[in-house]
Image (cartoon, rainbow, N blue to C red; front, side, top):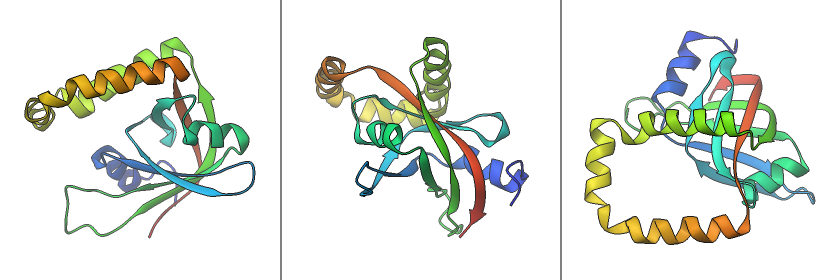
Length: 152
């Protein structure tokens, strides 16, 4: 399938969680769910920290697979599989762009605001988690350049 296929791009816009499959230095596979945004040309940005397993594995082996499912559409049973190469970026301009787009995609929408209010009691836990992560490393983006795209 063509990377600029309108059906593929629509699926990327509608999905909320990307599952990234990576390989460790020893060839051990791992799958991690991450928030993401789609970029022009089918590029996908996933947010994480440089100490996480996903980021460490991408540094060891840039080959990745991303699986996307439209969670809100129970009638759509397809999985979009994107095979590609990944790189880690800690570029501040890219991180700001990612954070702004994630805020609009996940938080600043009616369902996102309602969800944030329902889970407001979790804010201290999130702040503690973020503080612990800040001690371990820095925020980063995993940028995936698609090489093969298909619906399963």
